[in-house]
Length: 396
Image 1 (tube, rainbow, N blue to C red):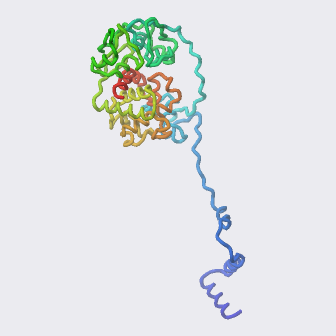
Image 2: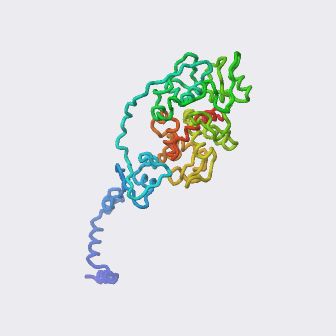
Image 3: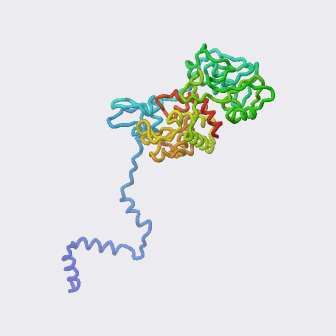
């Protein structure tokens, strides 16, 4: 052993490295090729040593769930990747409902049974006489304009004429869903009579809708909405046209409980915004009317910064149930887009708007609104149906 070799070994011992370790290191360095390069192949042993990244999957929703202390509907829905609105609907709850430990909640629909054939009552018919309108006929039989139109394959632009037979019960989905809402012998005004406190005009030879609108300081669009007419409708002498709806904001204007109101500047501005957003999204007039009626019921068409619990805005949407932050909900335009829902919904899949409800087009007016809002008072939306169409005509 040379003096230099002995000195190197002495230094190795002094820095605390065992000779065996130094020998192993030297052997590994000697075995490595001098031309080795750092490539992906060199890193494979390292990759194998790394523990695989574990992703915890979202829990699959069971068919039922027992509420635990501290649970809320929204937290249960989030745990199983469901929407709060769907859980509420499956259990017949509203946003105001309280859950308690030990309560069993349904999280999956057992099966979507096909609607059983409904035994329809014998259909009633009405023979149109001079002066009749679809609106007045619907009032007489305790039903709605939409129900009469659907039962007869008509639209709001359709023309009815004296001698025509119209089905007024027993054939519309709206009436089949709520048979008790249209009593057979309910007293009703004469077909030609306008709603209480509403102004009417008896058509004479030579009248046009444009001239009548000018005479009463209104618009043809308003006349269309109030009388269930369209641009292609024909008027005739003796026909009674409603030219002004009853102004009482809280009073029922007909036997069906329809309500009407004169809007303030703030309310009119919000109505115009809801209509504009609906037009931009390309939704139907019926969808816009449902949005207007919902806004009226929830907030009086005002952008409120208060409400039940944490409810806010025109549609009284709640931050705690996924409708957005308080600032987002107070953005009236965004709030309207979230109510309509669909592909352009700013909330994505977190909430369920009108366009996300399967078959909403064929639902009764109030049921479609209730499917979105899940309110404790579902019957209130339909009370503003007629007035909502009038607002649509005025503020478009």
